[in-house]
Image 1: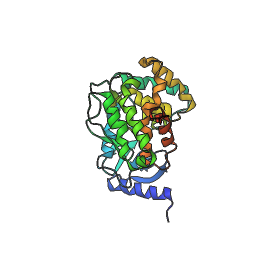
Image 2: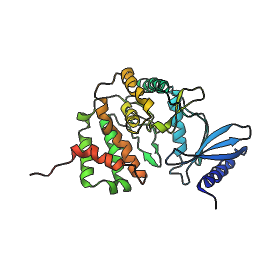
Image 3: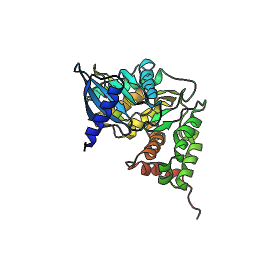
Length: 300
């Protein structure tokens, strides 16, 4: 019986041959992603491509939406992304990137690239022209002129209907989240919408062949820039990444209170993790801790 890596290899190789990439001779399984199956496919000319697929795709457009996100980040935001070789219902094939170097210089370069993305793509509305995907769950991007309403409805409360979230959060937790949403204008400053990556944890930051910071696995939309910042800030970036935050704050004129906002903004991603994964790596406990000030206390 094939082992798990061998099963991955056979599965991806069959898909690649099925779409005409018959010069692919071998596929090596890779790890790091949480939702899809991925591998490095070596072609007959000695070059390699990255390939990603789902055993059961959550939608016909999941890879088309991801490819669109990569394209817009590159063309509108000036961010390096892999070349899209193929994107269809079954699989996504991309040019290969490099592991990012473990240097402060790299993260300084990324601070400039991220600041450029966020400051040059401001938009009058929040959302995107289509829904896209966070892992296997749809990211709702219905247009809204009000950033607080958009974030509340489509980035926080949207997750309360997910079965795993209903199991993890009790009625008091859900009520606390609703109270937090009602108070968002008090908790977060007014900010414009801009193009965001949408799933910006450190694992999705790589290096282009020329060494520039490059991004993969987007879930793009026009929303607050600090949604991207919060994801990096709260998902254990490597020690050398500490230079990014201060430089990004300087480049974009962030106020001194930005660190205190990070847990509220990152609720969105913690809820998405609870909805999709078991175990949830402590996401439910983090959500409950963040919501604690918004829980009603029993009267004496």
